[in-house]
Image (tube, rainbow, N blue to C red):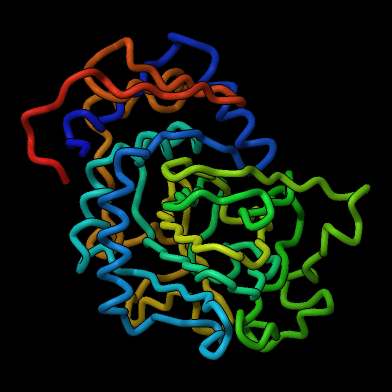
Length: 326
């Protein structure tokens, strides 16, 4: 069981090129894979997802898979009512990771998202990017997707390398009907969106990033990175935290967004209101996060998670902490 003391994450500037290399990779590719970073939070997140399944929110959606062999369901915006999600967001150090990747001095919580594919779920996650569904956009955005089960490459998250830099994001679609989310024709260039491409039909033109993952690994990706996934023959539970940095701003969409956050009263160009979207704690070293280097997990300086493009295995500090486990 991890404690908040052990999983405080400290980012030290100019100590090693590895962190800067990873931030560069994130900026260029729109996605990176972090091995084992949240392994000791798996039990906490599993308890949270179990509670989420028992007590779903108004946003629960099985995406039209009620009668399938295995459902593909998701739910979001539950951190304020599920303590396990709240403790992870505020105590795991995920904000420091996000700050380093985005090169941002601040990290603001947008929302949490649970995605579950039950054994035998045949429904694919359609190719999409998150930004068009949201009312926030900007260069400094990041989603961190954390699987709670072993995920083979056949059913893992798949991301189109560099797609966050495309001039037009792809059409958002309804995951049940697969039609344009805002009523647009998803097969044509319209509304500032382009049709989603299928990389499997153009393997020589489009490079897909996909990693087999173990519980506690993380895949971090930009809101505009196009991604999808195949079905799953085994249980695949994942918890995602969506965050934004210094330069993210509210954008007015042409319809009700997902999540909707009705009654927010924000206007075009405004920073997200902090009473609805809190700043995540970065500690006293937040000023150093613009040029991240090495992430230390725990008080022992020998327990280093070396943020390389090909990360090394992270080692937990020996012993236990006296603080209460989250």
